[in-house]
Picture 1 (cartoon, one colour):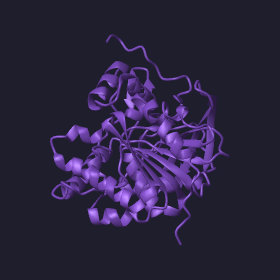
Picture 2 (picture 1 turned 45 degrees about the vertical axis):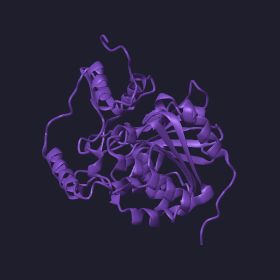
Picture 3 (picture 1 turned 120 degrees about the vertical axis):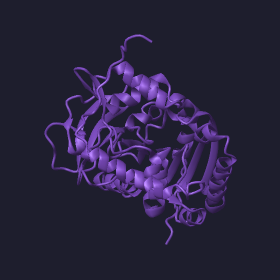
Picture 4 (picture 1 turned 60 degrees about the vertical axis):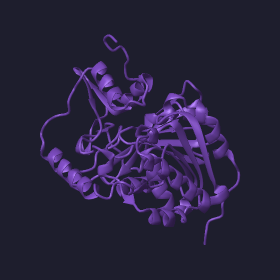
Length: 353
């Protein structure tokens, strides 16, 4: 491949300045909890709006499709991804919902956490609650990919009365401690040491050419196709005169450093709290296929799905689709119909007393 010719879209807010911890933010600032920065028609139909939601440490950035008067669906991206993760899927879903895809703190266009404030699984869950409060949502559905599904799953168990439907794309409601007991303290140590190292460093973000950025991204994300890689980098980078640099907070590294691992016993106990209907979508060449040499992981998926099925009964649906871990971006048509039918189903489960 020769010199890169792709560019950021015209609507990409290149004028956002640096916020707390190095995140970009729009010029001006706002005292309201929610600010709509701009709206534009989508080439696939509908209206896309860019939102800025005020948070104690800065803001959460989000993009929205549809009318805010429609039933809300909050979309949660995977680890080190951003809200553009859903750009190819949402246009294929029913138009009578209000889809909001947020950037987790330290990702995409959202503010970085303040220095000294660590990233943690539970903090990401609290972001979902803060976003719901900012948008004045009392009940909504969640659609999460990978880590986003795990955040959504934990939220759905902690705040069961708030979640109508939960869609897990290549994900699980929790991360089980299987095969990780000996590593958990090491993960915590490395997370703390890395955070202190980055906070003490004065080294600026590395600036590289668009082509170098893209190739590096694809090398580290083997399941992402080139077009989808470009899409994620459109929101995940800032363009300067000499090239691009990544927006994400450098304190965020390997996901296992920040996960809350739980036992199987606690998993079964926790999912009993679920009031939502759950759709679990697994790709045939997805996340666990990367680790086929370890049969325990296959057993792990069976445990998760069988536990959900036995607990939720008719409220649980499990579907396999062809594709890899990023099938929702690479071949969104493989799952769009399934998700559409699930969201449009009228059965509602009454809240538990």
